[in-house]
Image 1: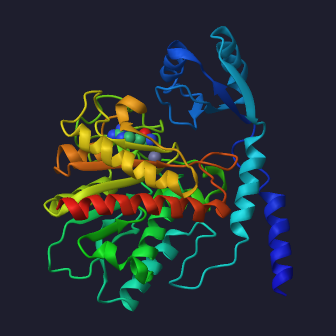
Image 2: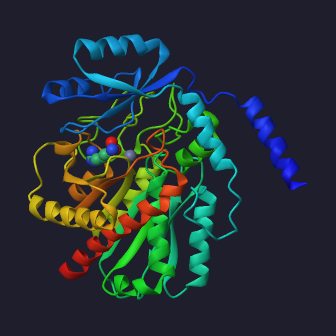
Image 3: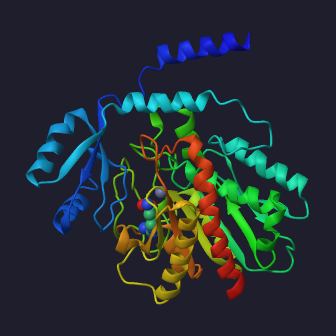
Length: 415
Ligand code: ARG
Ligand code: ZN
């Protein structure tokens, strides 16, 4: 009987959901060489007809760009004119998205309160896991609700501490501020799992407490899961005048809207009506402000790019403690690399990526005074970059976990 249901569902889905909303879209892999070509691409970044899937850095690297068939000729002409070589990476984004969606649907449901690292979990499953841990490990885990998302989903921070009245230094981690970057919440979950359910890691809780918010933008995250058309949604889901959502990572009140964000509601990097227009950004900033004396390390997980970034994102000037930020970042990169060779680049985000103001990392350092503040751009993969195949989740989670341990060592020794 069950088999029959699955077969019928499959049939119905393929019959009626024959489009993903990306019909006619292609992805090109561009191979810019030299400063001039890189600059030329950087200038195209806010071009409405192009969706850049690769973060643009200052060094030479392949750049994946999605374009609709209507703009295809315009783009390829432009590339030819500027002597930028390119390949077609995905000829038909539509079917690639559908294939991924099917893989995701046919995983068996997870038991209430449990998670695994062979699939990407829904927001409800994630919060149910946190609650289950609080119930099963009452002396180690508590949940603090820091508010609700725009659509009313709970923003739950898991606090992991062997002695919550000792006032130990806190490592705060969030993930999922950008909806489509699914690997980020998965890595946060792995850290939670290791800290709470693996006794071998008890030493990581001796000197520090860990506070983790696995999905900061649950509305967007759920939207990318539930809406076939929208696997690549990035923003929140707040209602604007003509379009929905703002880029929560451009919405923080520190040099807000100065550079690298858009004032057009419909753009992916829309900075919002005003600083802190997004309720999720407010909730996070309130929590950090309230705990700013104890939070010694702020980490925000994104994908993709294999980058360890630190402030500033609003200026190319380096922070005065650049040396510590860089050497700690490099130590973390080294411990990740030692697992299976994954290479990370470390540096200030304006200098190795691009200038973009209003990020949570800049705000944590510049306003809340959390001096050690980092954005980790995890590895990408799959056909589409943001859709790292599920069988790769565990590998990325494990290697990143080694990096997190190195962060922990530094904080334990320093404070
Ligand atoms: N890819 C991230 C973003 O665009 C990088 C953020 C780096 N930090 C910053 N403050 N610009 O949001
Ligand atoms: Zn991101």
